[in-house]
Amino acid sequence: MTLRQTLTKRQRLRAALAVVSMMQKCDSNDNPKCFIRKALTKREQNVINRELELLDVAEKIMAHEGFSGLTMDKLVAACDYSKGTVYNHFANKEDLFCALSIKGMKFIISLVKRALKMQGNSREKCLAIVYAQQLHSQMHATASFCVLMVKTPAVLERASVGRIAIQRELEMEITLLVDELIGQAADCGDLTLNRREEINGICFALWSMSFGSSAILASAQDAEAVARLDMFNALLFNVNVLLDGFKWLPMSNELDYQATWLRIGKEVFAAEVAALS
Amino acid sequence: MTLRQTLTKRQRLRAALAVVSMMQKCDSNDNPKCFIRKALTKREQNVINRELELLDVAEKIMAHEGFSGLTMDKLVAACDYSKGTVYNHFANKEDLFCALSIKGMKFIISLVKRALKMQGNSREKCLAIVYAQQLHSQMHATASFCVLMVKTPAVLERASVGRIAIQRELEMEITLLVDELIGQAADCGDLTLNRREEINGICFALWSMSFGSSAILASAQDAEAVARLDMFNALLFNVNVLLDGFKWLPMSNELDYQATWLRIGKEVFAAEVAALS
DNA sequence: TTATAAAATGACGCTTCGTCAAACTTTGAC
DNA sequence: GTCAAAGTTTGACGAAGCGTCATTTTATAA
Image (cartoon, rainbow over all chains, first blue to last red):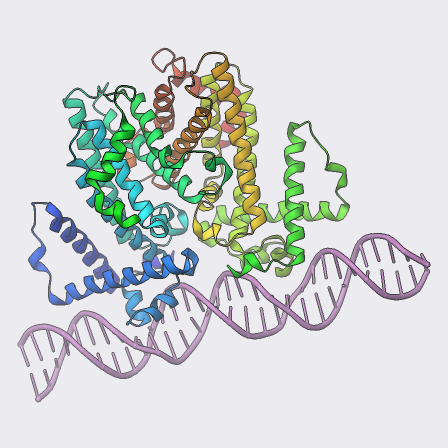
């Protein structure tokens, strides 16, 4: 708790740089509004690159030695920098987790953007978004727990303010993407909104279901209560029921969404699915 | 990871005792099948009582100093026992978290049992179950994160085998209670099952939605993406949509479930709701 | 070339974790 | 009532992790 209040000047600078880094990232995808890019000095570029490098190393340690196997000391030992340098990037261990979560969310966002471009009706696009999120948790199993981890006070209480803000901004970005899809569905008549604010509710419900399902599935792969399910289809089933509840057309008995699910894997995320096997 | 393999004889005994303790607890509620109760010696009773005492102290520390404020050393300092004794109960810190989660789940189960006895149709009872789970996360905010925490490899990798097993058994117990309700709903025609196994899917979907919603709500009370929601009703809304998706009668436009929600608070959980304010 | 600002270093102090040999208590056999 | 065996408690201890900061090194720009 002391940490959060006594941020040094340097740490505040880092936070600022991190924000810049994020904006540049989003930028480099396809956001047309770009004001900041050329404002980066060589020095700042170094900082950003090193941060990415450190995160890579951290991810490798985690993939290799499990979640609790990742310690700051090990990270320092495994990279070419000193403790002080590492701590210039991450205020503490929880901050590192938060950074890993942010990396994961950026990845998800890039997948979601592709999902939205898929051929198909609005409900199929919605499924593709869920597929994207699920893909991430399969591809980076250990790391994807960070996204869950960050929802935990253990992290929220200690991570740096700047990173938590970025985390939230990214959540917001996904939210907006989903909002847009919902809006389109409403415009083309696939979905009927009672009130305009219902968009928020739908978005939150989707997020909850998707988050809840994959958290439980990921953690309890061998638990009995889950083992009795057809895990591959559990998420699809859950989301389909939810979308039926919203009367998002075409309803699940009018269209074979299992086929859609397979199609998404083949058409939209072929590379990622291939990388998994 | 070493710990899990090198359980001492004593630790195995503890695990066994813990199981006994759990069964006795379930027992003392209203389970008619009771074989074990009198097999407990005075010594074993002491162990059980002390464990409850330790958990109380731990909860107080956590409520007071936050999640990361709870350390084994502090727990030792705050209770009347020595380090060795505390470690006889909890193999390590994560094991302690798991124990707290178990305590929470027992509480939830007791609430769920009451929920099932409420006056009303099957869908209302289902809502009452969700209400119960939500109540717990409001009443024991910090502690309820343990339930989330335990889904995390940080805990799963380190907690003792025995406790994780108990945790799962309790999950199973809730699952069975919900299964039963779903079965009844199917029998009385409120709900139409395509295949008998669909019970598993419905149960899992409910669990996912409920878990996901409260995890996000609890963690992000001031996050923008969530702030824009009517938080009090968010969970009710989510679950209602889901149940509509299952065509669980009466549908949400045929009955005022907001009223049901309020009624549950007044009739079933009056004491708990009062304790909250 | 040099003054100044920024960044990197790693030894250090502190906290937390988890262990274990020794001291103590309970049990039950005689 | 005594005593040995079995079980339990204790707290000092070593190991490991965390995070800091005075000092050294590097970059910048005048």
